[in-house]
Image (cartoon, rainbow, N blue to C red):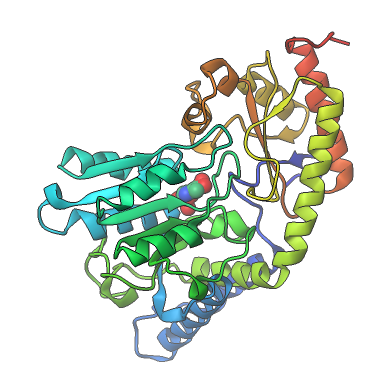
Length: 389
Ligand SMILES: Cc1ncc(COP(=O)(O)O)c(C=O)c1O
């Protein structure tokens, strides 16, 4: 990343750690073999994949045999939903519980399966983005086949009580999947202490490479293979492994595990500094999401009344500050964030909202400069109630 730029979009993706780059370069150069081959080259590649599997498993607090490598979290989410619900005979008897604030990689396959007869219940959220517990408890009584809930929201950083909800689901014999893509590396996770059956995550959200992730399958039925053939990944995900990507994922997980506490503290200091500074400069600014503990330490989603966030994002980019007007996959589109709308914001409020996410490499000097630019550009853009000074 160019050194003079200020990157505050770590929930979209993160820069690679140097250790990850080095490990991947070594794998690309020194591991030419196919992990399925019996010869020395194949054995060396296979060993590295096995080591990475251990590193990913340790980071998630589970055993290596539960990890199925995929091409990222979108694939893992599709794999799980289609693999558990889509092939279980008649869709008419299947019932999925999810929420209104999921990532599109869960919302879209749920909608597709719904067209084929799947019953889908979507739990609403309150104005802070927390799932409505009473609706969850009512839905449990209907004995759904599977619950699929996001652990930490990519737009607001809101963290849901999935560990407790997994216990409730387990007591009722309901399978429980968590999309933990934003939580891994930013929130403590120890699957062994939970009743979570399945979990999806992605390397590029924790300073690893893009295009690699995993589905964790701890208990419950194995999902039907999304990509059949080849027999890789216990026959669940055919195709020659992305060896260098998997090695990079492993190293990123190992670093995230060792540095979690320190990272969480640093992120929170920077994020709170940004919020305090913006609050002082722009008195009408509002925070989307809870300010207390149930939020990722790196994420700040704010509404600046009167601005168009997509225009602000472009102007900030020209000044060297990278932020997001919503989820990255929505950028370029002017439709308001479904997450903020689900939290009861109006279209105008959602379109005036900015997502700022800090991460490795950010400094307090950068935070202060970014806050100055946001203030200056918001005023220039005529944010309601500001004097344009
Ligand atoms: C919560 C969540 N789930 C899933 C995904 C998809 O991940 P990937 O880019 O690895 O497909 C993302 C990425 O933005 C995400 O934030």
